[in-house]
Length: 101
Image (tube, rainbow, N blue to C red; front, side, top):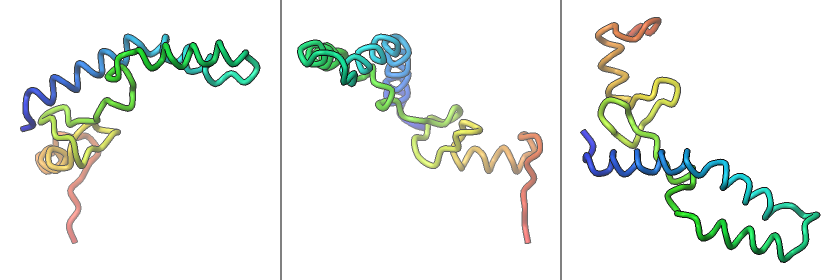
């Protein structure tokens, strides 16, 4: 199991990213708009820099839903390789068969 603090920190980041997503996208579009005047673009980039760093989507780490493990993560199943192997061996994932040769 991962540390509870790490999992909670990641959940906090996920909530912040969802809350600020629209505002961040609007400011990014304004900062990248080549047709706008330079002062407006610079002001948008300053406002973007003032936002909380943890509100960026890139700061959210993919973690296993069961254990919170941050590495060896399968996006499609939202599980780490260890839990995927255990659940597949027990036949709890539909359509997944353990192969051996």
